[in-house]
Length: 137
Image (cartoon, rainbow, N blue to C red):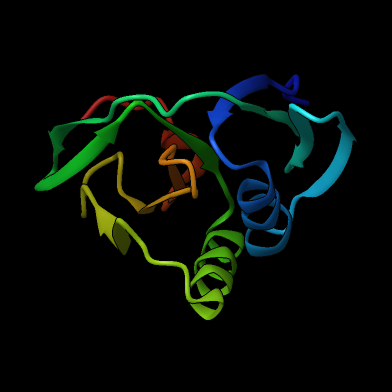
């Protein structure tokens, strides 16, 4: 079993972020206060804190301009596709739509990026071969 991580991120609108993480991504809500909310992020603890937005830069990765910083999850392929479908059905825009990166290489993966309402970049990916998560190209 992988130990759950804890990540706290800034959001400038708790209600909008609560809707995004709870309704769009389907994360169960945990504890909360007037300035923060816990979410079950597929077994990990994600906490949104009311705070100013952070700056985003972009780095090139296999032809994409990837937003940095970003965070997300590595999912099973079917779960990745289901989440992509759920996000698309919600009307939420993708920053980079679902596609395959590093095709034919050990790191071949499905990936997509989107921003939460506060401008935090998220990536969700699935490895074609999960054993290759840390394999070198």
